[in-house]
Length: 214
Image (cartoon, rainbow, N blue to C red; front, side):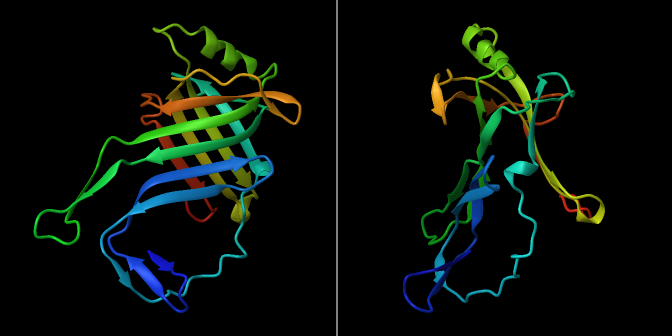
């Protein structure tokens, strides 16, 4: 992974670099942001690669987004309309690089148990209040469990561009009440990723560009 230093014409590369944690986020008045943490081996001097110009690409923005919820064992999603302001998804592979005596760089890597968390910031209204009530009244033997879909889509046919995040999790922390956003009462719905048998996973992310699905 190349990195420019503060010195003129100096470029450094991290060998055997891989992503160990990833954060994606979006809001009503902004695009989708991506951040990542890397781990790797030796850092060496390198050359700056020539990269493709992506200034003409499609930018996914908040006006293209929708949020949908489903019960834990259901595949029927209902829109959380006119309620969500923003979202943040964090994923940690808990990746570790090991090296042994006599080695200057790591020779072994492995992942721990992957973990993830999704935070939805929503207005407290007639659409979202059921979620808050469920969190506040849940007993130790019954916690709030939900499937969440966050969908960005624009265009049709060969101009179609979309991203779908399908997350399953349960709420393990008390919500912070009476937050304020421009005079509106809000709260955060925070879900920790948990395997869901209906989805056969706790997280999937699908992107489409009309020509290919990744």
